[in-house]
Length: 278
Image 1 (cartoon, rainbow, N blue to C red):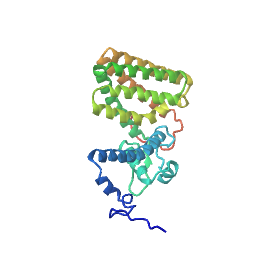
Image 2 (image 1 turned 180 degrees about the vertical axis):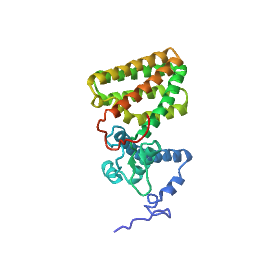
Image 3 (image 1 turned 90 degrees about the vertical axis):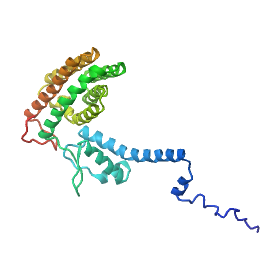
């Protein structure tokens, strides 16, 4: 039997394959190292982002009710991920105010108590007026086209009585206004408030929570009218009119939510009644 000649190199036949990853990375040129880092970072981001998107959607749709516990083990099993991306996602949700973290306890979906709703309405009143005013001054033609299209999307959803689509279209319409205001910090703060407001919109844009369908349709028509006035003011660059409509828009939402509370309708778990003025 012929013997198999040994490699001429001092390395064994498998040594190149068995090198530690860190050693192999050291032999890469700077451009390749950068590309590898981007790919690794991308995988990490996608891991927690997937969990974040899933939880974010369920919280805002009230599928995860206000005040409910977030079971990490169930999420790990459902999404087929480790606990690390789940915890990273929870940290990001907590930073947005949608989740409450407590030491040595499971995280909970942030409750919708009256004090929190008051804070939200006060914040959205100021930020929405500023964002809408500056958009009327600074908007681009491309931004205006998008704002118009999203206003129409809301009207189509309203025509079809699709409350879920109305909630999303209303959010996207105002997000487009925020994106056109020309101020990163205002746009960012507005976006976070609009996301939190999606939970409130589930009550204000759903006919189930109204005394009558005529009251519901009347409210939706007023929203459509205010959207149209907002678009018109932005198009003609009328900052004063844009800000005025934005203030009315917020006040309308506040009034509707107070009606909802006063009607003593059954609230989802976690919507707490506390002594506070909205």
